Image (cartoon, rainbow over all chains, first blue to last red; front, side, top):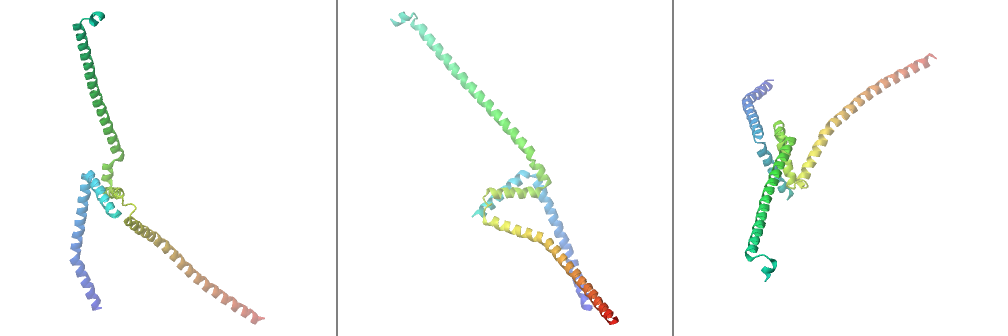
Length: 64
Length: 153
């Protein structure tokens, strides 16, 4: 019984310690996603041409 | 004398020759100018036509609108176009990717199917057992009923 309670307490402590980091990482990923989408929307031609070029290079490498 | 035979003096002949030469030169200069004008007109017409066609194509494809609506999808499509243009379509990497995708798709499609089949199988087994047990119990009752009737006789 005591062991179970201790285990639960430890798990809760770990969760409390990790939770802010996870939230921060999630926020960072969402911000980055927004930035990427904004950049693509602002420069569609550049992004599409870059993607075509990248795909071309990958295709050339894959063909070998 | 030849000049006296034709009836034209040497000076007049020279004048007429120079006049015809200048006229021909003027005509040739005019044609060159006309040609240049025509060429420039044609070039302008071709340029305007090309511009119109490009604008029409832009409006029809609506690339900016598509990027606005689905940015990642358009980038992925461009990547795919580049991959195909780079000759990666018939490569081992494509084969591996397609194989992986097909396997994943089959698995994802097969899991619900298998789940349904297993559920149906277990339900039928449970129902079969209950039917067997009920039939067995009914059979037992019938046997006991027969025994009791035989005893009565």
